[in-house]
Image (cartoon, rainbow, N blue to C red; front, side, top):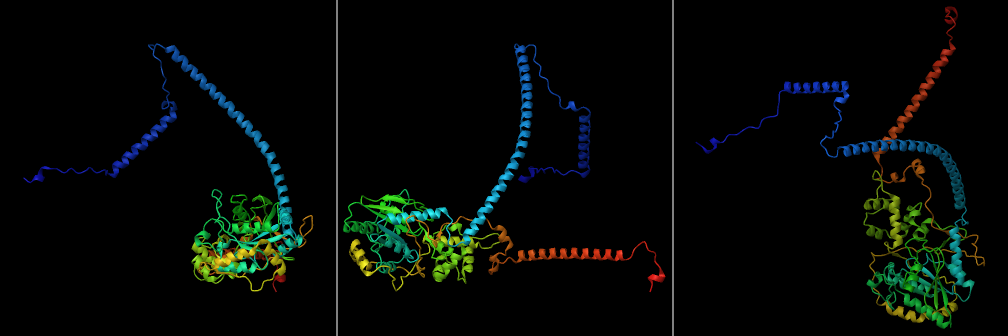
Amino acid sequence: TPPDMGKKVFKKKSKRVPASLRYKVEKKVREHHRKMKKESKKRPKRFNKKVTCHVPNACPFKEDVLKEAEDRRIQKEREKEEYKLEMKEKKRLEKMNAKDKIKDLDKLVEDAESRADLFEMNSTSVDESEKNINSVTDRSAKAYYKEFRKVIESADVILEVLDSRDPLGSRSSQLEKAVLESSSNKRIILVLNKADLIPKENLTQWLKYLKNEFPTIAFKASTASSHQKFARAGNKDVLDSSEGLLKSSKCLGAEMLMNLLNNYCRNKDIKTSINVGIVGFPNVGKSSIINSLKRSKACKVGATAGVTTTMQTVQLDKKIRLIDCPGLVLADQGGEVPESAIALRNANKIESLKDPVTPVEAIIKRANKNQLLLHYRIEDFINHEDFLKKLAKRMGRLKKGGIPDMEATARRVLLDWNMGEIKYYTVPPEQNESLLDSEIVQEMSKEFDIDSLELMETEAISTLPDVLPHNTMQIDSEPITHVVLDNKENIELGENVKIVMAKKPGPSKFIEKLRKKAPQLEIEGNRQVNKMMKLTFKKQLKQRSRREKVATTLSDSLETAFQTMVSDDEDYDFGSDVI
């Protein structure tokens, strides 16, 4: 016999049953449930019998066990009564609180009405102050201006900090004139801060241009954090420094500035000490220069405007005392500084700008188009709106429906501009309009011994590294901002002076945005065709329903008019009614 013949294969029993059997089982289950339900209605305690626990007589501690059970029963009843009383008291207190809330609601309504009236008064006063160009309504702005005047009056030497990228845009000629007119003994030193952001050839041109008016030095403030030490680069000049040193957090130009101040003290035979005031526009690095000279965090610094609010005094050594001043942007006489110019100078917080797109338009007009394309790695654009649209798509800043977020992208571009990510520089003009005579300039150069510093700079020019053209871009320089200052002793604001402060974000204009058509839809590629078609179809349906309603009302009125013409009470007469 074959070997497989002895094995038997058993099939697995199927779970399939006839339909009649399945229906029979379901019927019996239904009948059983119905019977149990009927029994439970007749005798409900049959299925809920409590099992009584009996203590046998043979138990040696029967009395103790029974007594303990009785005590436990009494304790449960007592807890039940206490819970009932507690819930009753809780309901009573809730009723009392509800009555008190009704009274409090009346008070809340009164407070809300009073706050609404106060808000309306404040909003109307703000609108009136914005219309008046030559008025200063911010109390903090007046306080800043007073601190600014105190620094000018108490200082012997004024350090005017300028942005090396745009020195004329961050300089005030009338401020310098007011300092010189207040006292003939006051001196001004121009400090070109952020010297590491421009090419060294351009820095040399600006030093040569500005030295025709005042002593000028290049400076790079230390960018060390609070837990790091504020290091200096020895006696190195900014022009005579390597690329790695320029990119480090060390300070450059501090020793040159200290030599200038020490030469002034020695030549003037000052045995006591001098006060050195540091003034300039917001966020040009005034406090950072003090920290670099002090080699410690003497003043609070920040990347936004308005960090320094009061005059701060720092003793540098026994002969030099530094005075920090809040930064101010003052308007021209009879005019106003545009918000775009304030934003490009980082004199206002980017988050509080109502229209961040306009400053970006100014950037695109001034900047080189090819440099922006290389920096952001985007395609060619037509205008500033097309630029923001393409940049928003590249950065992923999109709203609901895939619409580019223009405002968020514009704020990002402004942040890159102010933080030095977009590197630019300006070229000095050919003609120099000096405020001082040549004799005064020579006298000041002797006091500060500038000739020795000029020799150091000429020796370092030959070692300057070449700057690649794709790293920076040349832009047009901003015009000089004229400031009107009042020389009165009581330090009052002039009639034609306006101080531009960082504005707080106003109330939401969501309702106005809903009423107006979205400007993003005007740009090609941003139109949502299906959504717009649905909206137009919905609008047509509403107009059709209105027209139908008007037609029905008109037909009803005509029908009633015809019915009133023929009275139902009069009989019909063939002789009179038929013609």
